Image 1: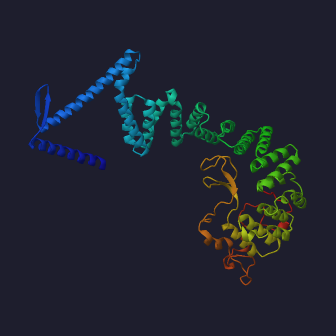
Image 2 (image 1 turned 90 degrees about the horizontal axis):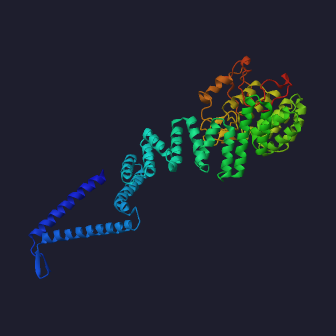
Amino acid sequence: MLWSLFKIVLFVVIVAALTLGAGFLIESSGGLQITAGGTEFTLGPLQSVIAALVAILVVWVFLKLFALLIATLKFINGDETAISRYFDRNRERKGFQALSEGLMALASGEGRLAMAKATKAEKYLHKPELTDLITAQAAEMTGDRKKAEDVYKRLVQNDSTRFVGVRGLMKQKLNAGDTDTALKLAERAFAIKPKHEEVQDTLLRLQAQNSDWSGARKTLNAKLKHGALPRDVHKRRDAVLALSEAKGVLDEGKTIEAQEAAIAANKSSPDLIPAAAMAARSYIAQGRQKYAVRILKKAWQVQPHPDLASAFAEIEPNESAEARLKRFRQLTVLRPEHRETKLLLAELNLAAEDFPEARRSLGDLAEREPDTRVLAIVAAVERGEGASDAVVRGWLARALTAPRGPQWVCDNCRTIHTEWTPVCNNCQSFDTLSWTSPPQSETVLPAGAEMLPLIVGAIEDKTTPPEGPDVLDPETAVPEDETQNTPKSDTPVQAETPAESNEPEKVK
């Protein structure tokens, strides 16, 4: 708007200046005298100005005619496009000027102006492969999806712009949530330009979302082939896809194929925890326990995890608690200072009813990393050692508001998953789940920590102070018959008296 106002003011100033100049020339004396062939011509001031303008016009016409003469001579000499280029030169100049203005308008976010300039450029240039690109992007900028889609469809019909049209339609379908059509368009775009990294990533993500693991592995191999993916990252992601493919085979009931696929996934990436656990179970099903032990030990050396311990327990499911504790030393000696190793030893000692050793196995985790699982184990140890119900309930009450501990968390959107998946359930990112501790939520219970007195209840004996750290006020405890209702935790440790069952625990 300011630019338009400036142009109007400038036009008025120029007209006023010309008017004043013309008046000055009319009133002034003198002029221009020209002598030609003995004849003298006298021109007044205004006539002199008019003569100068006419001379400039004559020179301009002469130059144009001279250029036309040169083009005609070239045409006579065999250049068939010389004359057409002469007449089109001015149109091209105007067309490219409009095109450049359209690009500038597009870059500055002026979608409607960019479409107008693209229309003008098309009028002069007749090159839709250039102007349609500006029109389509400007239409998307202004929210006119229908127009953008029509332009992209025109681009698909031209061999030189087919990829651009398919890619534009693919992005439109993705924005609209039509992933099925977007997948087909991504496959078509990939067939046209298999080296295009954005198309590779989009196709891989859509194939993973649609559980097309075989197709995703082919796309991943193409990324490696064209240098768009490091070899170590390719091995990791190929293992993820192979594991996902194995799970799909398992769902179909093809046990042998699932076992082979799981073993292949583990070979591709031995540090992938779900692949190691699944491969170990495959070997167990085949009666090859030694191979299962080897896989789990190798994975535990890289990253101790409850799923690995659970699979290791399945190697000998009917052994006694003492025998299991002895057999698990193959794992616990590998990473003795790791948090998961300490928790595993504590759980095994609980199952063996060696409560002092279970406490020693925990070390200072209850003070340094007090999460739900750690506090529940402490509660079980306290009960096993004969502590009062107030102490046990105090530890369990702390577990209610404690962090949940390490879980499968998406590195991209921080969404927590109950189990590992190749694709995040929230942001649909591929291979972004890591076993880590998520940020603790500010609100754990519906009413926060104020609900704890209602959960813990009242204790009859108010004179004996409860033992153990951070035990809540005993005046708010529940009757004795309600103490069996303990919160469920992620640990396999039970809150009942350990003497009630000698059955070996299932380690997750």
